[in-house]
Length: 262
Ligand code: FPP
Image (cartoon, rainbow, N blue to C red; front, side, top):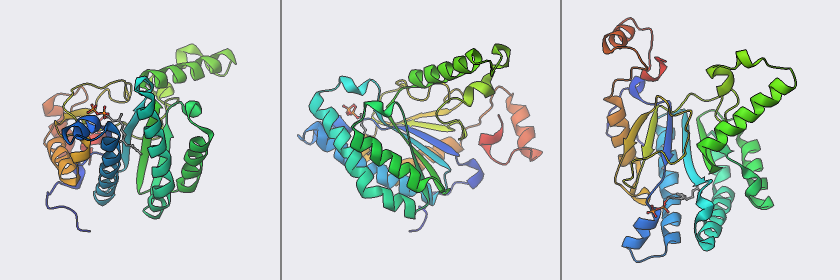
């Protein structure tokens, strides 16, 4: 498949994209369908976006599939989402592997059925050596949960005498977070028109460019993603520097990608 017509210089592409996939329910409601039909249609958008990230050679894609607060939804909808997750893993893991995708799931997975936990572990094992795209699915995930589990891990190290409290800085802290080995997201996309983070990657989004679109997730496709990438490419990221300093860094070739200033 050819890369879409929208031209964006490679160095202006994000290394890591994080997406809140919102609007499945409204998409279904507009069609007089049950909410669950919206989630099923949402899986098609997930596939399209993964394919497009592979084509664009994006290093990492993190998708918010189920938040720690989503258990509050009607039990029927929660069950459907779990079934969909399991069925999608069963159907797609091999294809992800063939395409060089490394799959990971972040979140508190003990709440999932043993069958789902086993499928997740098998998918992670199978794809663990792949390097084309780091695909992370956040499921039963919350940014506050992530920060708390990191804090607990550090406290345990201190209690065991392996770490001094003075040595806890941003780098030591980041190492305990779930996405420790990935660059922090450069671009955050939320579909569905709401403009909030909703307890997604709270620590990791500190300097991320935010992009909100009214498009409902099942309508989001490769062209919508290109639109977001184009918007991102037009922004100047500063990470606390002045605009002039950033221009100097670019002209001196200190950084080749806009995501490398930090
Ligand atoms: C938000 O839309 C969407 C979700 C809570 C679930 C997202 C799940 C998928 C896209 C499918 C499964 C994904 C994988 C990776 C297998 P909403 O229901 O809040 O929509 P609304 O705001 O219009 O009600």
